[in-house]
Image (cartoon, rainbow, N blue to C red; front, side, top):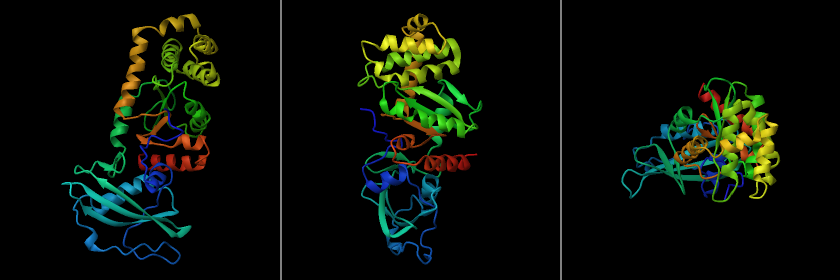
Length: 322
């Protein structure tokens, strides 16, 4: 089923990793430095805990800084980088805490693959000083859905959504706020109909492709707003009427859009978006990326994360990748 607002950061079941990689972030702090009064007192770092040559402390610090560096309340200490019985796979242990709650120290543990490009917990995630670079390359080259905002792709937010997904509907006001707050960002919508659970999602995606083709991206967003507003009408009995009405509201002939939706060209366009989602290993909607980095828009929509914290993530990522 679609996620109850899980972000596409491929969060894992380990509680501390889930909390930090997906929403909270840690300020950069060199490990093994003396702690100032009132700061967390991490366990001493001893050389015997560092038996692996890769990744290095610098590489782990670089990764954590990229992932968590915008929240100045968080600090960490790299406690161990160890060899394992699996050749080339290293175990990394990090002690993490908040300056505002220095007595509560948690342990984060993950494994790094021999190529240094992935970390493993209960899932596989990108690792390194530039963990989102490959996703960004793929999205820049292949995300070709309806767009708005800046004309250039210097910074790009790509939303993968399903018109029948209630969580996708819930994030739309957040997406609108982001469009207003970040005029320098290029926004792209990619169809990802979850056909196994949403019977009318593919039809809605096909209609949307035809609306954009016949009347441009602005018409697409009017159509999308109307579909999400009347999402309860996406049933086998009423979806044709609901989608036709949305096409009319976007200024198009609903009959022509309906005919276009059955063409091979429309189906190929939706399939290209689905293939892109699969290549990125997306298995839930909504999934939103900024410059290849998953951002937790869903958590804002369901009240788990303040909008200002989402903006802090975005501002930090934009500053990292000017």
